[in-house]
Image (cartoon, rainbow, N blue to C red; front, side, top):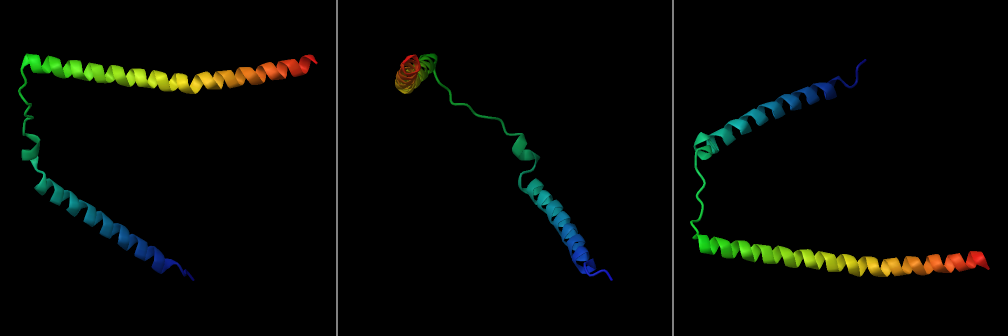
Length: 98
């Protein structure tokens, strides 16, 4: 006797339902976002050369500040860590010489 036949049949039925639902959702998406959406061109804001140079300068300054901030944070972390390691190495070195 096969007691699990009903479960297998139910699983096959659900797989078929999901496949049909998936294809109908694809059709709905194609209707909603058809080829017309792909043909639109991007519109860029017109900026004068002087304004563009100011924006670039501002971005460079911001990047420089971020870079300095990262270097300072790195130093603030690694200098105390280096001192602590040197302290313990020095302490363990003297302990072995005694």
